[in-house]
Image (cartoon, rainbow, N blue to C red):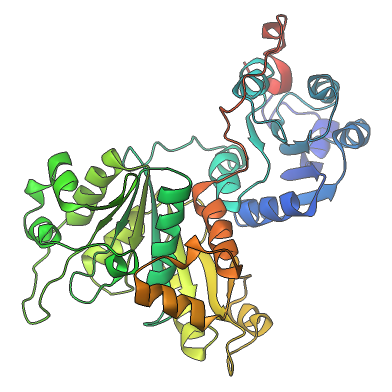
Length: 412
């Protein structure tokens, strides 16, 4: 029904609809939804309630444009969703979060019940933005500029803030411990030290790629990326500073496309240099990570980098990693967040001795238990959607009769 043919009561009812109304059970999920969707849907309302309480409320109030419900802990989640379908308007787009990771359950909820999307806990802000965002804004999910693995760029807002250490340890965790095919890419072929932090080697392949991108293919990637282990490699160069390199236009896109065909994750240690190739790498990333330390110079540069436009596959603002928190003479986290007018996502405590020892030995600090490792695991959860259980780990089964429910929630 269009606006012209709406009756007065119907028009008044439509004007009362909230753009997004969420009912969640825990603080972590609430925070992830607010951080992931707050920029996309101003005025979103999140309440701490069960799906049963949501059903009771929605019997008396107008349905929102987008509804998020939490079915974690429900003994009969499908029955609860059936009850919900009887009180929401068909035009409402329903999103569901829960604690079941079975693929069959995901298919039943999204394909058979007509739910727009389902995510299982724990939630990550970027995953919420990427999977729920298009539904909330009523736009199609983009296919991405490139096909293949996921690109994470790590950028230090100033020199010496520890961005390379963060990037190297993130790549180590993804490759060595999660067993995902991962490459640590260091485009600084003059002074970069990402390979050294992993005890790896650099080679001449990057220079050749920068100057002649037509040579980049899967064979080039296989020969140029130096293996650290079975599922972790590093792609770096070691050129003389006095010998300049003329990078060809579009080399960043070509190189990333080749890397994504080979690896599940590309962790790129991208400097904040105002060069076309570095800007291209930042724009083509799926998730940017900005690393800052508790100094005034970091605050200034963080604001500048946050002002950069987002890339086509970036669902939300860059993740902010506050490194060396608690450093003597440094700013407090509250002061930093007040100055940049947003929250820091990951905090890495000041612990110079273990980090320095790991760098000297050419081994990742993440290999040892402690606060630094915990911070890297939190970062991995945000950028790589790392959860406790893989989505296809289980094989739940739901009996027949679900196909007839495909008209729920306005889906066809």
